Image 1 (tube, helix red, strand yellow):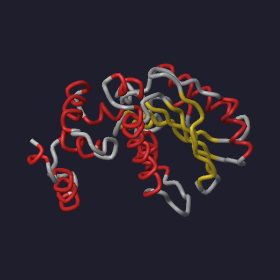
Image 2 (cartoon, helix red, strand yellow):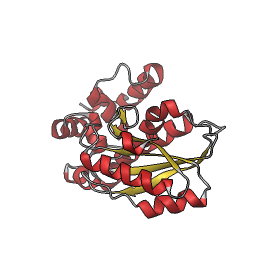
Image 3 (cartoon, rainbow, N blue to C red):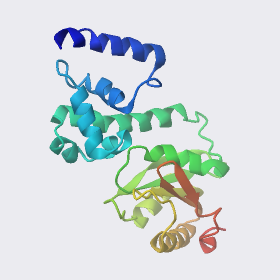
Image 4 (cartoon, helix red, strand yellow):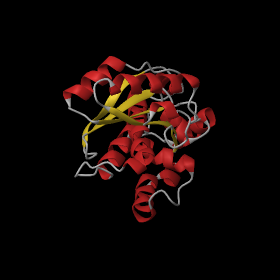
Length: 228
């Protein structure tokens, strides 16, 4: 067995550098990732156990930290696994970063999708722009449980005034995996639009994101009274 595994990590590393993960099975990808958490441990059984427990790589990466530890990972390995989706989100955000900061209002769905990679709780994100659609601010306003995120309207208005914004767009994710806006989402959008209009800010859209899917409430005509 020792001879069989001798040089195994070196061979997998060489294979990865040659083909990337395209030629790897899911358990091999996990095994390779876990090399960097367990320097002298056979990670193949750990990888198989994780896949048996969670069902897929994405489910493993999206699992809460405590759940990963309970599944048998060390705290160091669990933290490393949780880091990967966050690094992916930062990478996508940076790669797609428009240095001129001019936002294409027709591509807001794509703009917002990458900002929710790896977020397993509901988050509410605010985008503020000037009259020429130049980005002034974009950040998380609130985060909640797997089913609800409270929208701090006062905080949104304060930020809009602080940045002298003219146009605003908001987005939140549905961790359930369905991007269809709820009745609560619609009521929140109408209320937010009316409040922002009182300080001279136009709410252009509210995008609902679920995994790689996104629905524009403006384009879907689900909330016509909120958009002018």
